[in-house]
Image 1 (cartoon, rainbow, N blue to C red):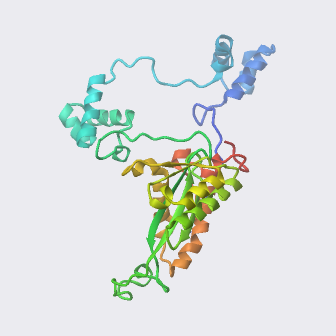
Image 2 (cartoon, rainbow, N blue to C red):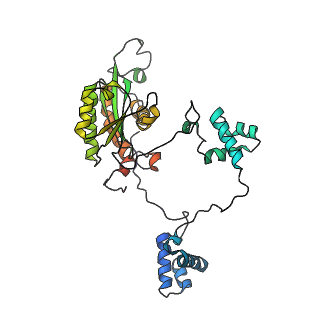
Length: 331
């Protein structure tokens, strides 16, 4: 099923590659055995490495200490054949101004397409999704330092599903009247900026009282995970910015409000991206027979999202991996 994810515990690897015989701790053990008086050749044979390698780590330890036992980058100190900075700037200008791909940029600048692509990757311009379409400027990503420092809140409106299922479940022939309207469900969502831990509820409206009640329950959910909500980021809807009920809810949980700039939903991008995930992996993941069935499936999806679904911004780990004192994980 779509929610059946497997949890993978990630540990930091200190090897330079997957076939390396020694980690940083193994190199330290090697040095300690040699400095204790044992022959380097005997220690090297026991640890499955050559005598040359053993002397290399011993020499680094004697000159640099424990820091010398860490892996070094393989990048050369100098790259005399690297593309000049002026040429790289020209490639970046063409990308931002005209949204051209590597092949067309290469034709204009006279460089190989592979070189143009590497330049775009180096400047993080290889994906158009990272550019602000109107301005062509790279989108500045940000992330708060600790859980609860900032919580994003937004509402996603979804059409209700008639009992028995809509066109997705029964086909167009069984639902010929497209003019009938049964209203909308409003999915209220809150997501923590640092950990991406998410909480959602389905309601029949997005009025001030509903938003205030959702905020209190979302704060209680985060508190159960050891997260104290400090600031809440929303758009400029009346229910968030003007209503007394929402302001009182903020005061009750001890959080301060923050609002995005007008017509700049990118500022609230984490919850906007979560809304897209909601639609793709829950709301439209399968054909539901009713709105109630879809609502019941939300809790299961949220558990999969928070505890099992890998998140690219978290290095492939689930959001719960960044929550303080979460069993089995370390922040």
